[in-house]
Amino acid sequence: MGGVAGALLRDAVAVEMPHAADGWPWSTLLVNISGCLLIGVLMVLVTERFRAHPLARPLLGIGVLGGYTTFSTYAVDAVVAADSGGIDVAVASIVATPLLALLALLAVTVGAATTRALVPGRGAR
Image (cartoon, rainbow, N blue to C red; front, side, top):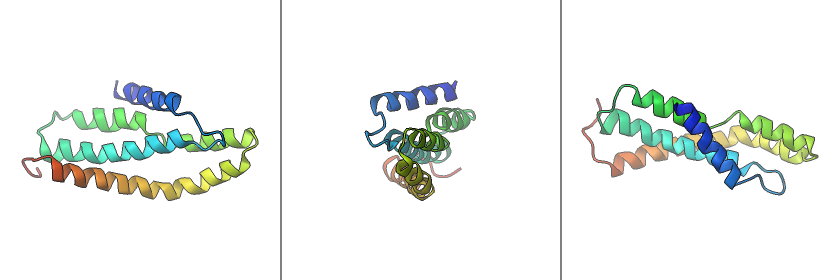
């Protein structure tokens, strides 16, 4: 259930934000970074701030956010770009993605820290 919901959200972003004219996969980047921010928020909420149902974390984290984020799609985006003559975009995407993964780590950290600062809670379990 969660994975379907996340995949539908990801598809909605892709429909509303198609790849740029140059073929750069901005929607894939947006989905991955925002998903990482949300996983940071979620983990603080369900482990530190609220007494959540034991299945909330896997449903929302693995299911919804796992279905929403799509780090493997960058490879498909690169192949599509290369097939359509955008070899420069394909190579840039393949090289940039591991570097951009550092932004994902930062997004998780920012999401967790911001949630800790803004949401009062009962403390760590």
